[in-house]
Image 1 (cartoon, rainbow, N blue to C red):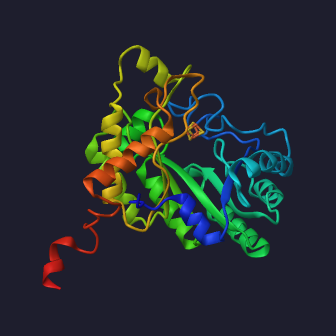
Image 2: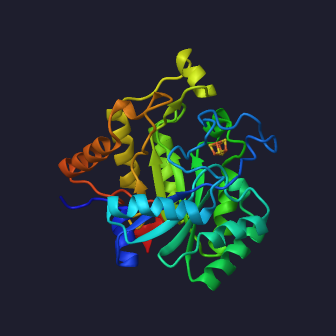
Length: 315
Ligand code: SF4
């Protein structure tokens, strides 16, 4: 079947000429939305261990984590090169020199890239300057993964993100000045978002020239504020079919060059009240691809809103 959107695996294979796999790395960081700097309880969906449920503990050195994960992942996925993925919590929320040490530890001959996940309000030019030096000295690609979840700033408030859309735009404009690729994380089924928000998500990713996007379906981790709301019936989740519809709409409207790291996240089955409609993530991905094939649609098909749509006929 012909791929109807840009997959991350193909992009990496083309860029590095080999199979590349991300190795998760943990460092001892927290998040300004948890330690009281901008909030104490974190985002309503964030569990105690953040996003890194597959990660090794941060007490193990970065070098050792890469070594251990490489041994496990390389034969399993036939990967030849790697991206060190600083995944958990806000990985730029620590002094710049300390972060530099961790990033340098991740530089190894078969590590072609470093991906740093963080929040929009943890992007500062001093950090970008340091990362640009490392990129130059170590000849290694560096990308920044920004959690946003939705462009709807009313929903951001409900989620208790502790930042609005403006901080995201500020971070993106700063990162672009240093030419690092950006991957934005979005949840397409937040209970307060509609299809209109999905469309706006796609348009804003394109307009801001976000190179990569990771789409997730919301999962409900036990013990979170969201779990409480879910059990009290205060929030409703859309069906799997509606999620598939939203992803297809997103893909049709996002720019044709955007790379999709994921169409749905790998949710942890344990410790959740709800995750991916109790269906394997790959089955939902396959259903999306299949549906796009049946409809004969593709990424960017409806990306017609750039460069003065209303006056194009006069030019
Ligand atoms: S920004 Fe990330 S780490 Fe911080 S509370 Fe939200 S989801 Fe958790």
